[in-house]
Amino acid sequence: MNHLKIYLDIDGVLISKRNHQPVSNALALIDILTTHFDPFWLTRHCKGDNLQTLYYLANFYDQTFISLASKIKPTNWNNHKTEAIDYTSDFFWIVDEPFNSEKLALEQKNCEDRLIHPKFNSTPDLISVVDFLKTQIS
Image (tube, rainbow, N blue to C red; front, side, top):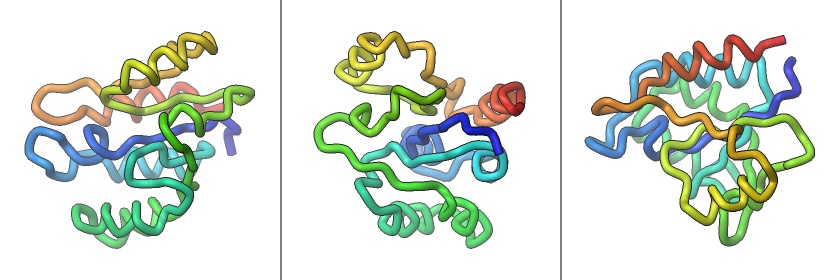
């Protein structure tokens, strides 16, 4: 397994913000994350425990997806999600729109290039994220 940590947001990544629906290719993303990387939830839906995260996702995805998603580790943070990032490790954060304070925290650590933004039309394009992650598999 690759020791590259991947932090994953939900809203705007796995659930489209425009129509609040599951996003195509989300299963492919979760599969590559749980097979080849060290994945962590970094979302408002997870603070210290991923049980609520999985309950939330079960409103949108089937049991196959939830089973894979259960392998993603929880994070804990207080005010800003960036508090949960291990800056001593190699990582990427898949997020649609980080807050300005979170962007600033990444800039202060010289990690602003660690953001992965799914390309948007009406919904996130996760296949481009999956393709990028495939290039990171060592």
